[in-house]
Image 1: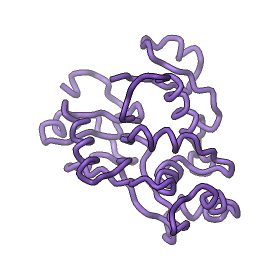
Image 2: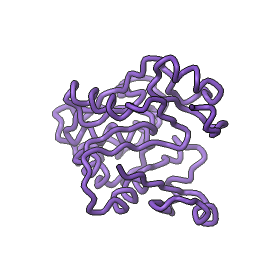
Image 3: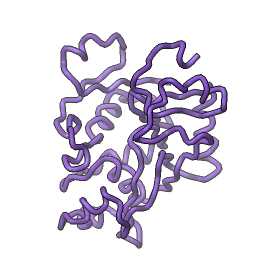
Length: 219
C-alpha cells in the first residue's frame, strides 16, 4: 500500500510535512471558499496522485480528505467486498441522482448553457441527462476507472461533488453508494468526540472529524 499525501495550502506548511510521499498541488481551483459556485475541483489532486504513483503496481485507489477517519482495521476489505459483490467500479458516500430535482448543486450547474454539452462530449451512456452527486471523501476506485476519469478535462467548471461521480458514470463505469451501518459520514456533523463510541458500535469510518487528531480519540 502506498499513501500519497496531496497538499494545496501554503508551500511553507507543505515543506514542514514529515511524510515521504507528498505532492504539492498548486491549483486555484482547489483553493476555493464558496466551493459550489467557484466549482472547487479535485482533478489536479487526482492527477498529482497518479503522477506520484508512477509505474507502481496497484489495482485500487482510495481517495479521501483529512477529516475522514477509517475506524476498522478491515475497512478496505469491507470496501472491496462491497465493490465485488455489486460488480461496481467506484464506491462513494452520499451518492444520489440529482438531475431533474431541486438539488442546489444541480440547479446551479444546469443553468450553464454548455454544462450538458460537455457531458455529451464524453458520455458512452444512452441517457446523457444523468447527473450524480457524491461527497468528495472516502472514494474507492478501480485503477481503470480512476485513471480514465482523471483524464477528462472540465472545460466548463463543475463542482467536484457532481463532477467525479457523473464522469465515472458517463464513462461507462458502475458507481454505487457506500452504506455505512451507523450513518456517520456526512457534510454537516462533527464526530470528533464520538470516535470511540462509533468504533465500538461497528462504524466503518467517520466524517467530518475536524477537531480531534489525538490518537486516544480513535484507539
